[in-house]
Image (cartoon, rainbow, N blue to C red; front, side):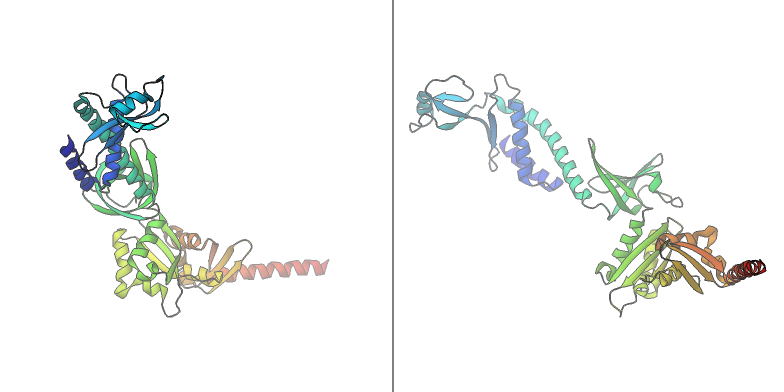
Length: 365
């Protein structure tokens, strides 16, 4: 088994990416378990495996005593000096070979089964550590199969689950298709790590921009907020730490190529890129892009705003089924009430009229 064992360790090292020491330690543990199944096995025993030759032996530490009361942990002074070293004295601890006869063949079979199990556990642990550290990151995989409503993505070392709640309703998932997803959560289970991924998470859009726009990756441009209605439309708010760099232009890229790459990845999800501003009046006005805004009134305590737009811009500001206004509210975290110029004028006239009536009534009284 010796040379075959060393060769097997080298193969496993290359195939699975484990360090040789991890495999040797697993083998020692497996051999020890095999030994403990032997009749009259010493409970204090341990296994030493030579990393160069592959030879292994079972040893037990025994204390040198005058009179032996426990043969598993003690050895007489006479036997210690006769069989091991004449220099031993009372109280010394010596290493005694307790390897059973014909242990090699039976141990090899048992150790092989145990090693396979231990390597699976070690591999799961390595995979879990690798992917748990990547929560909140993007991963690229290949669709392995579609089982019911779940889509299983092959990540090489393991697979991830794209559940129906994290799928974009307008997308079709086909076996063999390469796909980018956002790692939402990694759980440790008895069957190995369970990796939950998403195509709908706002973090996917954020990470795509970080990968596509060098200025974001380098920290010159900061992505402040993301709002998504997956598969349909999204808005992102960006700002620049360098006054010489236009954050919106950086995200759009030369001839619009950077944002177009992301739109293609998300299968034609429309993306509005707006400039963030610390002044909520300016920020809210920007968030309603592509609509033009006449004025914004804000209530800082209630975080509500009243936005007035030209009459011909009202439908654009609100968007189809209220989508543009809804995304702007999510992006800014402000409640936004949009009125056309004529609607606002009518409301203002109504308020003035009410005030006049009140004043007149009070004067008449």
